[in-house]
Length: 342
Image 1 (spheres, helix red, strand yellow):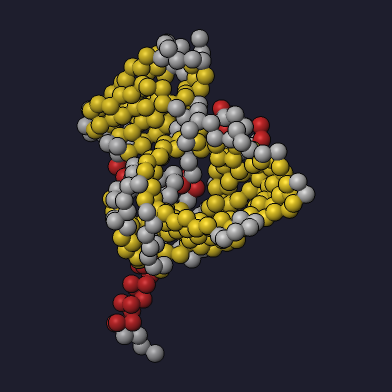
Image 2 (cartoon, rainbow, N blue to C red):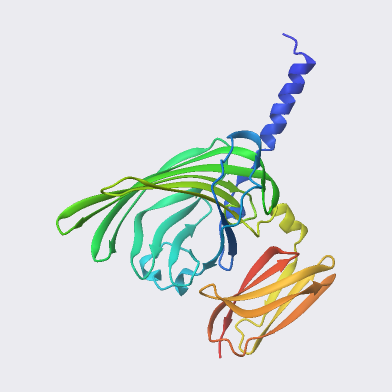
């Protein structure tokens, strides 16, 4: 049967749409030591529809509070011995940490550590599997046994991940194309026995997350979280949030790319950072210690076409591992690790 021009044109449109589907990759998502995220918490909004070529308008999200989290080396944290399989930790205050293993195939949560408890998963939670694209879905199971307030707690649960849409997202930080939305539904049970009285607390989270390659965390989220205690009624909390320092993706990073070198390494009294630019651009350099705390050294000035060299005094730095975070025109361009020895 001869195809009509309309049928052929329709097929071409479907093919073009398929090619436009974004794929979240490990290289585009996995956090690295030195990353720092500024998150804006907001009141709840409807997450909108699932499907292809969506336009999600969340520009009405408001600012309720701001928080900053930093990616640090596991070896520099208080509870590193309990998380031998992890390669990064994330902290908001330098005293409590979440632990992860970021690999080419999955981003896995292994638990958390704080002064009140250390919860190390014997079976980790696959937060994301790579590559991930529209309509991909999976179910992952996780479990742990940990101490909390002198009581043994047995945790078991599952997470269902569905990449349920892609398209363009608008939030108060800007408009972003080629965004992949992931629907994350997690349920887990914490069982304990206190004074011979067994109890089970049920936790349920229904969350929508928008991801864009080049940003090492979700750029927007809408969440409902319900806790059902052993006695009494369920308690629900709803909220949303967005990343205030999100970039428009890998293409933007490439457009602002720079060659970066740091020397000497190891260093004692000073370091030099050379940034080679293709045109005049704003260069910002921040230094962090191994716990993710900014040391106070900050350079923010215009860099000119060619090689720009920045000299930073480190005489007052204690011995240890540090990270230099280099941004060009407000977009994180690279992180360099260096050691201070005296």
